[in-house]
Image 1 (cartoon, rainbow, N blue to C red):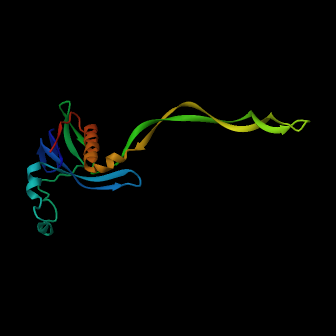
Image 2 (image 1 turned 90 degrees about the vertical axis):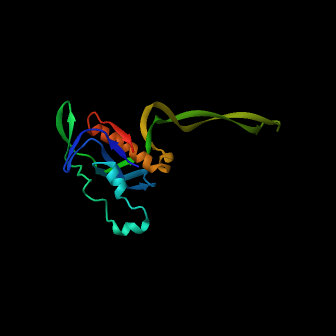
Length: 185
C-alpha cells in the first residue's frame, strides 16, 4: 500500500513523474489518541515492489530497499505556475485520532432561593396538621452562554491506523506540492 505522486518532481537522484510514497512504520498511542509514522519516497513503485522480500527467511539478507530508487525529501523541486520551486516533504508525521465537535459553555453562579417544604405539626387540640416552612437554600445555576469547538478522540479510527495515516499524508502532501495529482497504489 502506498501513494503515487503523478506530478513532475526533481529529486537528488533524478526526475520522476510517478514518485511512490510509502509509510514504512507507524506507532499508535491509545492513551493519547495519536498516531506517528515514518515516510519514505521512491522514484517508482515497481522497483520497490521487486525489492521487497517474499519470504521471512529473505529478510536477513536484505537490510533495506536499495537507495537506487529512494530519494531524499528535504529539497525536492516541483512545478508551480511554470516555475520550479523547492519544497521539503515530510519524513515523519504525527496526528490525533480526533474529530471536531461543538460543546456548550456554561456560566455558573450561586443563587439563594427560598424553598418551601411541608412539615407535620400539631395544633392546640393535639390534631395533626400540615404546615409549610420557608427556608433559604444556596443553589448553583448553570446558564448556557455559548459553544466552543473541541477535538474529541474518535476511537473508531484506531481500528484503521494505516488508512487514517495515508489520509493524513495525502492532505499534508496536497498542502505542500501545488497542483498535486495523487492516487492510491
